[in-house]
Length: 460
Image (cartoon, rainbow, N blue to C red; front, side, top):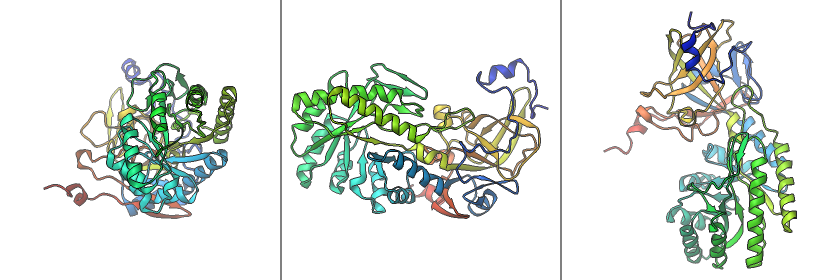
């Protein structure tokens, strides 16, 4: 009885989140096109992505399995490039980066943001043009900065006074003049639909605007002729679904641009407003229109520049999740199904917090569907959990699955293209899953599955 939709009593209501919808969806087999990859559908009851049946993918590659819709990924690159024509679009590699993804980004004409020597190595290994790379990070080591300067990366975003001094030394050493931006903490913190315009200086990133640290950073960079200060950078949050916070941030950055012009007679030509563009994960989430966002940001930057009496700077944005997120799906095999009478049904899958840490870290929400077949069974209120030795090992906290779900069924979780493989780990010594790209009815491995030999490598 407890596996199906039914009145569950007082205790049930206390356990579930208050915002949980009281009723199951009308059809558990449908795939919302705003949440699932652009080439996804069903054939013979099974989910297909890129024209490939998930049952065939699992038969060949096993589970858990990350699946990336190449056409979806590339088409979103083109969406951003077209919408922000005249500016720069740099893909945020931290969302998900491997050599093949770096090739896609390069071929689609985008730039690339990296924030470690490892990410830079991935890009350089496939011949990514270094002038289209931006190096980020709050604690770039001397070796990382040296690698970036030696490679000739296009921009280095300064995040501390120590970095400025190191860059000056390295520029002299290599006879280069790196282009530098200042990461500015503008006092705007964006959270999904809201922004809080407060002095949010208590964080590890950037130079505080309100304390004067950002202005001092400009002084120090401009005092070093071997460095070229080209602009300001700001990042106000993640999963942002409107431009209100960007408007406040741009206005505050404009004041610093004016101060730099007045104090140093230098007009900085670039403004990077970062990324953080949200995607829909569950029914009711907002699906952003990239063109509307681009038009709004251009209008904001033009307005604040005009009000400040400055020429309009070149606008750069850094989407990561907005490109990779919806292109990715994770496939799992159901292992055990356990009723907890009066509460819910626990559906255990063969992965968990080792391949998707976001639910445990952030309370992230996802949409999941029975993938290997369709079902007309009544819905059961479920919690999809992993196989790790943690009670917080949850993939999807609350969802509806068919009441005839059985061990061996395949379940697909949508929207896992960003920050899942990047945050993957080997907790309980689980190997990291493979990443498979699908396109035009064919699949190919772009990151191989780890083996036990990989887990033991390096141990003495």
